[in-house]
Amino acid sequence: MFPVYRVTDVRGLYLFRLTFIAASNTVRSMTSAPQLPLFRQRGGARPGSGPKPGPNPRVRHLARSEFRGRFPGHVTLKLREGLRSLRTGRLVRALQATLREACDQGHFRVVEFSIQGDHLHLLVEAADREALGRGMKSITARVARAVNRVLGRSGPVLRDRYHLRVLRTPLEVRRALCYVINNARKHLGARAPRVGPIDPASSGPWFQGWREGVVALARAPAPVARASTWLLRVGWRRHGLLDPSEVPGLRAT
Image 1 (cartoon, rainbow, N blue to C red):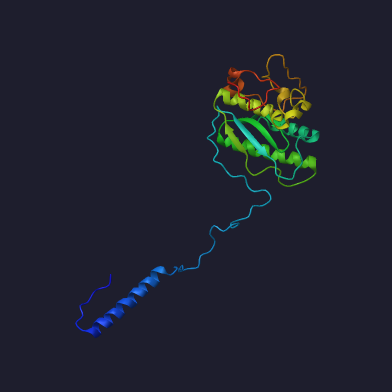
Image 2: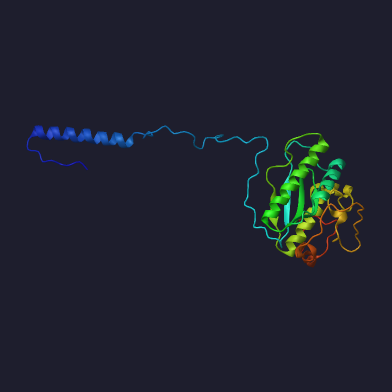
């Protein structure tokens, strides 16, 4: 508020009123006029602002679950865009040979797998998080070399990150086994019978957990290691053996 002064003559009152009115107008103009920033602002949430993604944006890094030796893991490896399908005879054979060489690294094992058009699924075991990291680094490098060799190319093959889900219960493991080994039935739908009762682009031909009457008949050495965790050896069987016609997503109880 402005101070009020007592006035004794008309001239003083007239001068006071002029002063008051001028001050009031100044206050009104200061409060009603748009306020400009003191400094010029840059950036902000403009449409299209910020760094632009490249042709293969980095997969968002999710904090990986704490990995312990008694728990297996479900790993998904995704192919970079622009590469041909992995489900061709030459690529499937090359990837099976690669897994056969690298499936058992002592503290890291690939126990089951399936090869799809633009990704791979693996069920793995590792002694600890460090062993998991070393094993996956080796597997991804070998997979990239195998694909590049068959396609006659060079350069990256897989996306930067892999997805890991730690499996802690027998039911989770049973569902993951069905999801990985029978994954072709999920993606191919009505075309799934063309791959036969057991998908040859998976570890299904070597799998020993099919229901009664289904026998794995693969002759070549297995491209997977034998399971060592209780969950993958025995525990999952509490919820029933697998059927080759079972479609992933229809949950066992």
